[in-house]
Length: 195
Image (tube, rainbow, N blue to C red):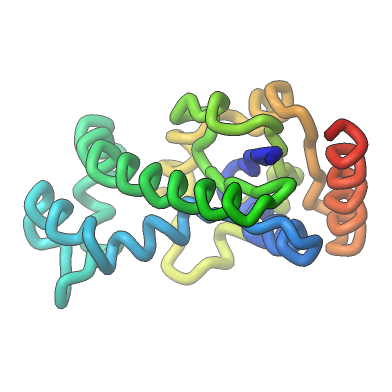
């Protein structure tokens, strides 16, 4: 089973590209979606204990949590030490299920794949990338996003240029969706030929 690691900086089109892999029959595990689920589940009491006043009705409120961790490396490390092991447990369960179903390939959507030294968890690394102006426009269109918040998030992520250098494949998401779909289909054909 080929484990495809999909990564890229904020606003580069990971979610859209992951759906394109799913459309080709490649099941995916989305680290961000898993965190979202954990924030309203088993991670919430642990985060509330570490950062009092950050949950509402038993779920983490990201707007309350953000001031505690953004731009504060030690606090961010504490949060990650709670969340990352739980995400890995979910990922392991996903991989075991996919293996039992004899899947030929799976997609692990890991936003901070390089930043968390996750290269060893995958067989192939795919980086999604778009021009900086396209990225900024996409991110700033998100509800509640501010320029300061965007810069703080970018500051935690490896530079796009460095990610592209480390990738096995780069998918340009700065053009139209059809071209991105063609790139995904071409990549899957290449992997099938290698396997």
